[in-house]
Length: 178
Image 1 (cartoon, one colour):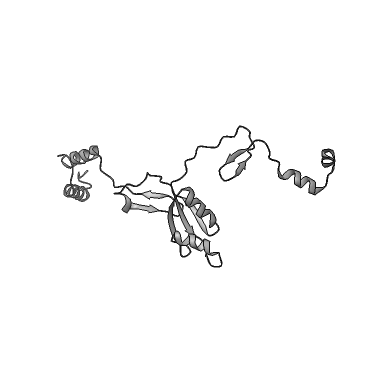
Image 2 (cartoon, rainbow, N blue to C red):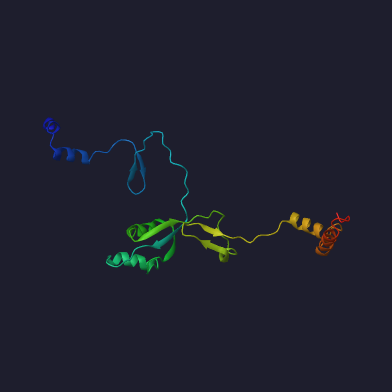
């Protein structure tokens, strides 16, 4: 009987045989995805996932099922272009996956470091997911000392001296003002 199955070449038979076939190799990712790289020595680059996502509603929930509207209301996304910040955890990712056609998800990055409690008021979240922290700047001690030395220098010319000297040179240009 096996010889008969192997010898018949109908499209239905080939489809049935191929359905259970799994190609050897490949890199298995979470979520049931298998990736077959072109190069057998392929290594994935090191990547640290972001801790937070910026979720923006880009499509109306009108004419969509009640469970999708429920997820949007849990995220407090009631209108288009509203933004919510959510954690990158499996439970939240499952909810986002169920409404992926209604939202845009952007990972939040911190190019200048994560904000502290004092920096929260000086934090800006851009549309591309960059969280810019404008930290309060503290002056360096060497610069403070250099400024004090410059201010207290006896050879320093102040504005009145510069004006008087410039006026003298202008008025006496040909008689030795220079």
